[in-house]
Structure formats: C-alpha cells, structure tokens
Amino acid sequence: MSVRNIYYFVRNDKENKNDIGFFKKFYGQIAAFRREGNVHFIHFRDRAVVVEYFEFNSDVEPELKIIRRFRSKLAAQLLFYYEILKFIGTNRVDVLYFRYKISEPVFLRFLSAVRKKNPDSLLFSEFPTFPYDENWKQESMLKKIFLPVDRFFRKFLKHYVNFAVTYYDAESIYGIETIRISNAVDVHSVELKRKNEPDDAFIIIGVAGLGFWHGYDRIIKGIAEYNRKAPSLEAFFYIVGDGREKNNLECLADQLNVNDYVLFFGPLTGDKLDELFDKSHIGVNTIGWHRMGVTGNDTLKAREYCARGLPFITSGHDHDFGDDFKYVFRVGEDDTPVDVGKVIDYYEVINNSDFSSIMRDVAVKKLSWYSQMGKVIEKFGDL
Image (cartoon, rainbow, N blue to C red; front, side):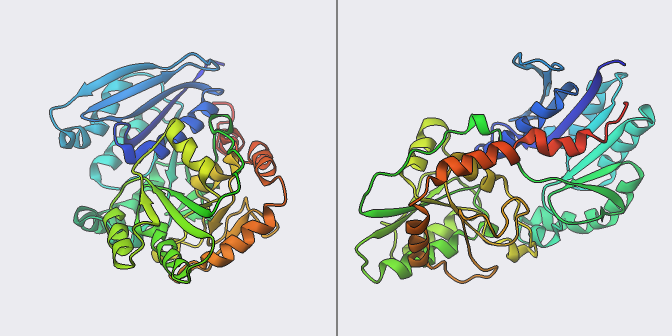
C-alpha cells in the first residue's frame, strides 16, 4: 500500500500573534498525522499562502514552500481555495482535514472539486466551536453579515464531508456523522512549572486571545472585591495575550481602580511566558462559554495548564477533568465575580500535595494529541 497523502488546511495566519495558541494545536495534530502519511499543511503567512511538507514517519524539519504571495491579505483570503486546488493539481488526496470557517459557494465548489477528482478520499471538517451562531453575533459586522449565508449553505456540507470532528456532544452536525475528540497538548513542549516560593501575594494568570467568552471580567471584579477588604495577602491578575476584549478589560480595571493589581503583558512565548507561570499560583480557563450558549469546556488552555502542573479555575463540563479531579476550582456558568478569597483557601488546601507532578502525569497519560487524533486516524481504514 502506498503512503497516504494527507492535506490539512486552516485559514489562520502564522504571523498573527493571536494565533500562536492555535498553531501549537495544529502542529500537535500534524505530529499524529505524519505517523500515517505525508502531510501537506496549508495556511497563511501574512500575504502569502504557504505549505509545510511533513514527511511520513520522519522527525526531519518540514519543507516550506510559498504557493503564492499576494499584494494584499484580502487577495490572499479571496483566492485561498483556488490556490489550494492549483497546488494539489493531479496529486492524489487520500485525506483532507480542515478547520471549519464558513460555508459559502466558493468553499462548496472547492470541496466538490476535491471530491470529484478523489472520489475515494475522506474529508474531515473540524468544528472548533459548536454551536457557533451566538459567537458570531458578537463578532465583527462582516461575520454578522455572513451568518445568514453560512446558515443557508452549511446544509450542503453533508454531500462532501465524511466526518465532523467536534469537541462537543453531538451525534451529528448538519447531517454529518461526528467524531468527538478533546483538545490535547504536546506535553514535552511545555515546561513543568517551578514550585512557588512563599511570598506575600497570590497571582492568578490567564493566557488567551482575549474574547468576551473568556470571562476575564469575572476575575477582575473578583480581584476588586477581594482587595477592597485590605487582606494581608494581596491578589494579582496577570493577563497574557491580545484581542478584541482587551480594551474592555483595561477600562474595567480602571473603573474598579485595580490597575495596580490587573497587569496586561500582551502576547508572550518561550522563557518570558515560563517565568510568569513560575510566579503564578493558579490559571484561568475560559469561564464565559455560557455567553455563547456553549456548555462544554474542553479547551486547549486547560490541557496546557495541566501539562505545566498549574491548577486552574474553570466553568462548565470537561470530559477529561471529572468531579474527582482535585486540581480544578469550579465556578458557576454565570457572570458573577469569582470569589478570590475562596480560590486562595482552595489553593492552600491542595498546596499540601505535589500537585504539579500529579497533573503532569495525567497530561502525559490522557491528553496527548496522538491519543485524541487516534479517533480520527482509525477512520482512515485501508486508504
């Protein structure tokens, strides 16, 4: 049997700092796929459509090729699917895996063309959020305009897509059979957190591409209520990342007079990010999914916290962290401020154990991308 040809595309830009976390995920999934075939990873880099070629069962660094460079990002976006078809040409496509963005005529024609040239191929559409209609209503005017377009055309997806990959409980999505996976992490690429030295401050950290659904306003309000009581142990909130919600969070911190306790660091990676994690006592997962009508909470960030050995605050249900998992502080699926005093009391209880090593062990055994993508790979069969 010949080596499988796997094409994986996303409409994300590697030059966009807000997409750093997404690309960690993409490369984790690709590490699993490259054990099954040659992987062509297609995405944006600023004004170019590029492909990284990962050779089957090899640890050699990928080859990078610019498919086409454009004069504007808009042109790159508009001609993305056309350039993928040109790049594929007459090559065999065994598997096409993509991160779902929107259904519209050009996209459906692209899927139809792939299916026509490769009738025996398998097409997988990953839905990073589902349902997503409420999320789109909170986005830019352009997305709001395209939502009715998506609602009309997405019903035709089932004619081209074999499986819908989702992080949520759904037997089918738009008539497509689902494969339920959880977010995962490349554990060995994440530094284990160093144990905190005793100090006179309690530090909460949140790392995200700052959207209103992250619910960080709940932490800021909780910090304000807690520090207003003049406790002996002050609490701080480190916010790492950028995004649409940043200005609102900064304004809220200013209104509540907690600018000295809520610190914005912008996007960070590498040693600088590791240093902040080492100083922090507890992380914040997404605690505002309810604002979009989403009840599940299987985020990538929670798995990164677990791999680092950092307890975290969360809301909603996560299949990988059940009620018996001690290193999660759960808050309600509502907009009430987080009770920081109770968070500190909780931390003092678990701090008597070697929680970092325990969490790391859980991440190694349960949360690798290979274990999660195996649910997708088993559908490849004898391709």
